[in-house]
Image (cartoon, rainbow, N blue to C red; front, side):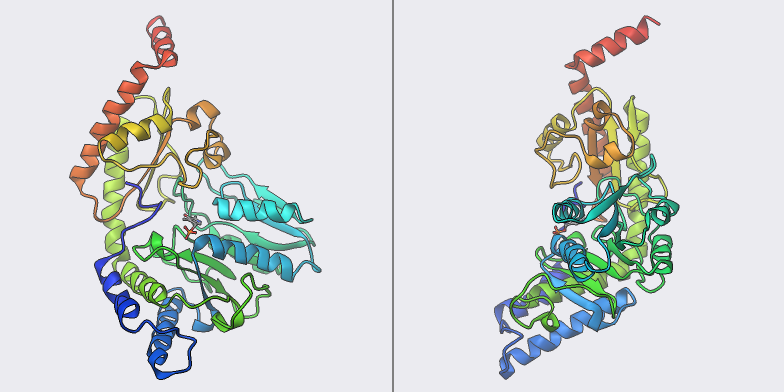
Length: 389
Ligand SMILES: *Cc1c(COP(=O)(O)O)cnc(C)c1O
């Protein structure tokens, strides 16, 4: 129930990678024949992935994952265009890989506008347009939110960015392989994706860079990735990434239908069975596998421990912030007060989940929430007050 944190490598993906670890393990940059085939396979993988998002193979640059791609996109544009301007527009619900990169740049003289979102977690394209000034060099808005699953109006934002001559980056790590993406139709200039969120291996991702977009390099060294991203090519990882992306595209419609049914079953049952519960995020402009609840009078972290005892893996927000005591920045951004935001749990499904798993989870949630509320003085006061009315 935590497939937004990571996913299982599919057997077909593992099989596609295996020969390039055990047999054809050469360094694709070497000149001898032994490495020739693997270099060709990496290029085939690049073309296959490019085709899936309507890009050309020359616009796909492999990285070590989503965090690196986000860092590269933002720091790279900031560095390349610092003479043109120092203003960046992003949102208050981005992944930490974007937010912390923006903070890093703020300490170095850049100005960042963090746009608010509405109570469903959606960015208003008009607010993006209003925030643009002469100094604006980059707009970075995520495709889909990793905590509450809301799908942002990226095509509209891309159109606005282009009308003003501003570069548009989107962190599509949660959307890639889950939602159909076309970089031309959506006016996307830079796009981050990561293999391990779509049944590929960990440690490999990509940055799509539209031809002509000015961006400096992040990793300096060798001539890999056409001199733009140094480091020995992660050939098996890239080949696995392409395989996973192709399978995800083939199965997208079927998986979406299946996950949506499971997601709606989970939401309906929980709202029916557990009082004082809310669903976070938009119910339709939403990733098919994302469910986010807030249960009043409890701590999400305590609930996670009880779920874990039943063998259910869930998250209180993003894996990156777990352990921190502050409530999720995303839940605060949609306007939830601290005490409600603290009671959050995110459940993210896969197409391997069954209706029985959903029912088991609903029962576990029901028992765990009751147990925690029974121990809560706040809940006791609330019930007394309610019955005294
Ligand atoms: C997981 C995630 C990332 C980070 O990707 P890694 O490959 O794990 O570095 C970035 N953005 C979003 C929205 C994510 O969900």
